[in-house]
Length: 112
Length: 112
Image (cartoon, rainbow over all chains, first blue to last red; front, side, top):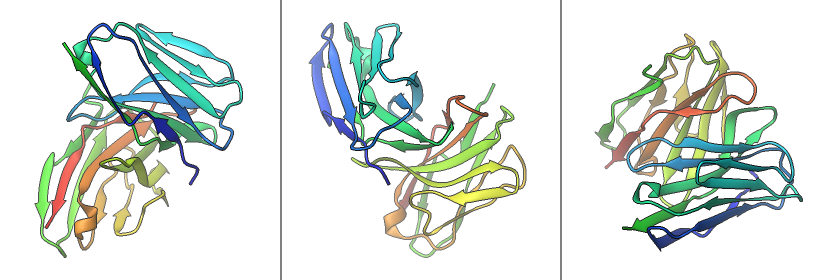
């Protein structure tokens, strides 16, 4: 399959700091999705991006679809303890979101 | 709404035993899928279904069987468990087009 390279693998930050993580691929994609997984739960969709250059916000989260269509980043501003979890980028296959390929995830730890 | 319900939450098997992981959704979603999550590997697609009576293989299908006799249910069968199948298994469902993938809370399986 086509791999998604997600970095960093893990981050340890202080509450209130901003966070940035990214995902790259050697292939062009039409969709970038960002998911968050809380401990002991399934992933939940945070932001979906469908257009090159698109910049989308969801509260303190902002994600962008790279103009080359080969990368995406996710920023979290003013982190809080409940931001702890694993963040995954993902891309879909074809024209729907039921068949996804995931990056390996970024584990975020927030120290209060 | 219950969303996607997975049972059991935890299971321990001996090598060679068989079992079925249950998954049910109450959102009338057409699409259902199974993923496994291993440390540092992200989520990988095992099998998926685009409707009742239709299933197909994902990235890592070997050792698993599925069937979809109703819209609501999508069980995953391990015919002869192996230690390599120790993992956390997630079932997910989605509606048509770009509707998001909804995940259950997972089944943590250990094969000794």
